[in-house]
Image (tube, rainbow, N blue to C red):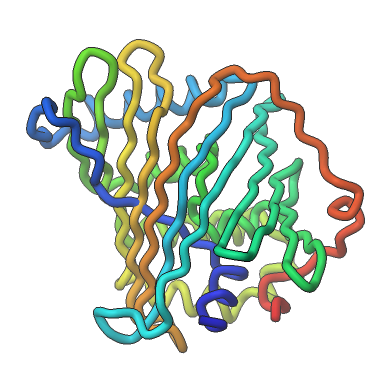
Length: 276
């Protein structure tokens, strides 16, 4: 389990499966990416980015091991999140409960801040955080744009009068683009310290697959639910990593104002490769 917790700390991947079927919903129809899926996803990105704020709640489950049944158990984390959109970027506060362990994290400005139990607060660049995590529950405009550029195939299903469901299949291109974006945005020192980690991820790209399910309002195009599953095979010292993330959004346009606690503001910057 220690190995999995370390992996979670420095590689907080989260992901999607296609669950939550309504009783009266129609069978999913394979969708045209250019004519149907991408315009709807782009409209959802604009709609979510146009909100002053919103809240999310859900959970993440992660496991790693060498066989079909994980040899390190499953780590479950319940998540509460509030999001504030501020002039082209997103501030986020997350509260995460893992059994008896509770921790907090912030995305604020150009940095990601996380409280590590027993160690205090650490700070990493946002570019580094996004390359490591792929998705952690926040509906980030930048991350959705990356998905939009990487989706391989999709289906759309009518979920009644109010919503429709999109299921998007992602492959190695999503992972490679995430790493490429980090190389473009991160400083030379961060790239140098994370080169070994990035090379390991690139080497495992052939074994990467992900599915993202989005429940989207028909009229307002706001994302109601977000579910993602990821599988990554042949990771050095871990074997196969699997994760599932489910989040629901609510309190659209809530008055949310996020500020860093003083302890987080004072955190020293740390590169992922130095986490212990």
